Length: 594
Ligand code: PEP
Ligand code: MG
Image 1 (tube, helix red, strand yellow):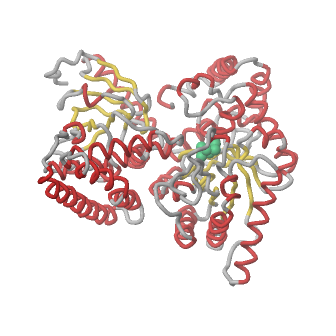
Image 2: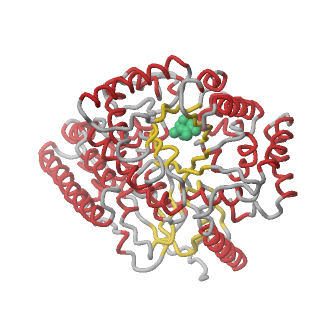
Image 3: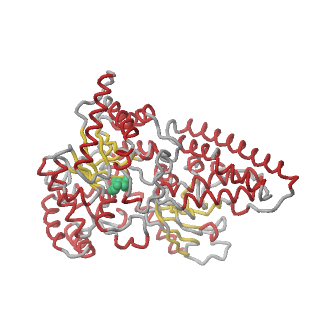
């Protein structure tokens, strides 16, 4: 590889968040940031009208560009990503953005670009204070709309990723979803960004396009001049600038191993998820966006074990109506038929976009009006959703699932509302599945402790470990300062899981898991031993987990579980599991399997 014409030391190692797996090796292509370059200056009162006109023209130009992108994207991916562009178009019309900019020009006598830059910063501040990861990550949408406006205002032409002349790794502060969608997969080897998180649109689209990506590197755009040779490892979340010959060779081999492993995994696609001693597990997919449906089909997943319906509701000023929801749910049903779809009702919390209730003042949003509590406070919205789910159930197998349940009374209220909706649909002669199965997420300690009582009320359980671990251990799942305490193998969590699975088994109902714990191959023996019957995870993880299922005997998993339950700390459990699995199944958890 050609050495860098820069001061960057050989083998400079950066660590970020790997959001899309795979290894990319190439040269950096830097995307500039208009916001960094925007200059603020004061103007004369006589210039105000011209600056206002320039701002308004930039808004119109941005609208035309976005509509054009939307047209192109819809041609390429019908029904998929257009909603992201719609979100950007909506932000373009945002009253606060306009008012703040015009105030800056008219009252503070700032030039349009300075006033706009201040308005964007203000907008970002508001979003940064929101205690919801998903919404906070919508800041990237604001940045991208802001960047576009600024570029148009400053007369810079938009960098078009599809016009890349040669293969490169894209280095950007952030990539807007619109930019990500225009990526030519043959030219863009991978991308790295300063900002971003696991649930950002950019990360989601990268995964669906299969492009390795590392985000959250903080200052990679400041560090890397265009043309720098680099390697990104999207599985490990690492970036190496100016790699030495040795590192280069090492990663070439790693890439080969990864590609070989991926190919090998394809052979598991059509095989059943069955242990050598005949225990059959059902592996399903977690879905947030329509773009993921193709992967669900390709992964060999047996339907959808968790559809996070809140993704339909967020980032928009008004909730989707019954018809729009029906179409979205039906789309899921059609995509995975004859397998079933589990639709979880809205799991929002601190949701600013549901404007009837302002939850932003809650001191403890994770313990506040989220999930089913919000839906039961807004029964009109819940009924609309239940009607749409019921109508979709006429088209194929659908299950309905309620999030954040903490007691029997909540379940009964949900069931009563579902009955009400059924009654109304009968009267309207709308078809639906009379026997639609009803499930609940078990993700609060209260639900785990009364799992036996809850099991008598519903047709299935699905354990949401992302929240169960957080609430069991009193550790905020999004707070990096206590991340070391977030331990799925903590004995308290294992006991809760055992309680839940026993309650389900005694009541004769399926017990699923749809939290991230289900997708980690190393936890599989524990889940098998506990008797989980269904696991739901991101589609790309299905083959990885299936590969382990097909080699571990259920009986062995039970033995492992018994010893694991005797350990005193999460670390002891982890060490025990790793040691035993390496001894009994040498090579099963190789580095390429992560
Ligand atoms: C969970 O809590 O484990 C879960 C699957 O739900 P979410 O991550 O959407 O809260
Ligand atoms: Mg949850």
